[in-house]
Image (cartoon, rainbow, N blue to C red; front, top):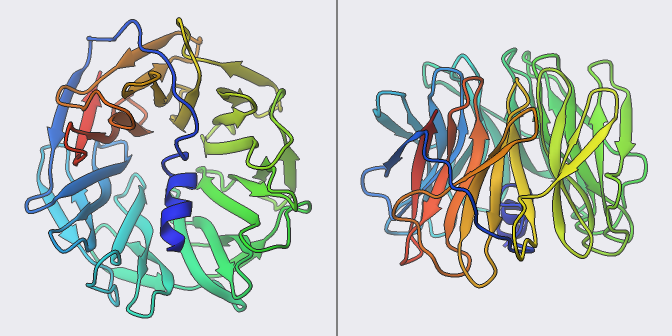
Length: 355
């Protein structure tokens, strides 16, 4: 199903490589949580107030959105029109300061639609203009502008910007491929309206891009990024200053930071046997979170300061076998991190780590 490939590719940063564990940071408080009745809970985004959104899975393998306040109160929701059958439902990905959420839902015909849920719980659903077929809301800024991507009837992907008034503009990176499963993936939008993401070219090599608030699109590659199929530069997020975090792949996987002026800094969680570093989010101050692995063992979270110091952490209860562990996906202005961990049975649970 389409969701499986692109959820892993764009959100979970597809498990490509593993890396080492070292120097665990014990200074923060970690709280774990589950949506009542959930078999799995996935935390995806945390805002300034500490409110978390994400999605959860019920016993029938149907997906639903949730909102968790900083006090721990949980509200669940479903987008109007979302299917209630196995593997389908509502997927929430991003929350802004006011508490508005964006994401997408899948209907009974297995068509994907974007949505915005405002702070009072009112939904607005939307679709990219024709020939768009599937629409994926991915990032929302404080002005209420949404970015994401759509898949057309030929399975080519295009970026879009949905303004707060509902106007949708689509765009493509100039060198994006025009074949099936190629194209442009917009993932993050900052308070100034700048968008960041990546695209797949005609050879399935990946490259980063940024769209300025005025519409100018700049393509880029992290130094050292691979140039063969399934390698390249993958953007995770852009902050208010225009700093972009992500990963690049070659024989291994490495983190990078790209300044608003285009200067790159690469980094790795270091240690014996280090094989990969997978950033997932950057906050307004330039702190980056993400995860790394241990060969033959589990994944661990990391926090990289703006100065480049890296601390690592593991949620208590996380599994210690291959592909299990701790997966941070968002960091707010105060440094609180939200994500999920998978236990020894492979079940996922939400967490929030407060410094």
